[in-house]
Image 1 (cartoon, rainbow, N blue to C red):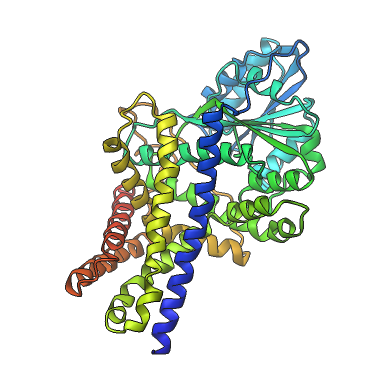
Image 2 (image 1 turned 90 degrees about the vertical axis):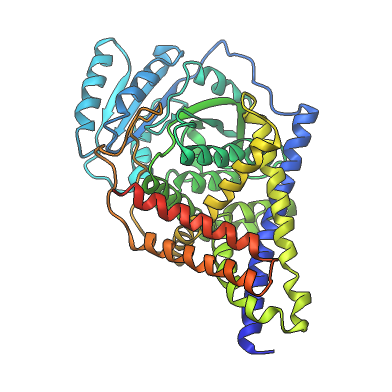
Length: 490
């Protein structure tokens, strides 16, 4: 055996093994979710209270000229005793958003509502810094948080506050809905992936007694939980995941309410999707770097430790996928001619098993949340295929984010632009926040599309059909991401 060939095979096998183990954890969550649904053990909505506690609603904003006013109107329409409700608009904006917010706040203050327009002297700590700054003047026993693109329903607080029915419950998280799910193929694919997280994953972790995470918005914190866990810290790009783990390591419980929905706007532009994905994947790696050692040494069950390990390392799947994909092409040249490699190379079977696990994972979510859509396999399979293809196409972009996170390279918190996209007639292309530049990374994604097309050619030429579906999906994925990156930068 040549040393280079052994190295390629070893790394390739390790990557597929990691993906396989991750898929087994997802499969376990699917089983927990399926069992909970069948046994009807999902946490029921608590009964209404007679004495409602004081609540502070925090609205962190940064340059949200298109959605700030609709957010404030939705918050002021919450069905909650006005004397028990404080609203903080944590406005770090540097554009016309500030004037719009000031006018709205003045109008509601004139009606006697307890709403304040909070302006910091600087934007230190980005969103985490704004939330921590607001705590100093927050009067509520509980703190609800909404990002600018959310439109909570009037009964949101009346459904979530009663869920704090035990003193150790520190957070109540709700499910995200989608205001513009059918706007385009990209929004449909995002909704498909998020729906799986907000059904199977969050519920599975919750009923299994594992660590879950606050999703940054559409949830409520007990103020004493935030303070006890050390407050909002800006050293990761996912301050929500970070604080969630710090709180649970101090024995606070997080409760998830799948049946309470808070609708929001999905990014419609590829650059906005990439920006959001970069922040989520890099922040997850930063949080893993920060907490993995604490998790391993914590007094937790083995199952919870394993689940938390793969929860924190979920963004690393993109790195394993990208490396395995790149190595799969040169491996074609030597794998056929050296029989001793065949038992090792059969580890490709792990990829098939991983795919089956993911199919079950996403099928449960599809059946649960797409009840008003065709439920058959003929509707599900094309959507799953396109979602996996799209995820593969983002693997280079997300892998760079993950590596930067683990290496400790710091980058600014780049917020995802919102354009008030609701219907197919709405347009964002000429909006103030539309990003028009094409990055070098986009052209690398185009080159990877050609690289995997070459892999498809080799599969046919050398009759190596085991990797053919993999290479077809990769070429389509990188081609799709490259196409939209260029199109949305015109």
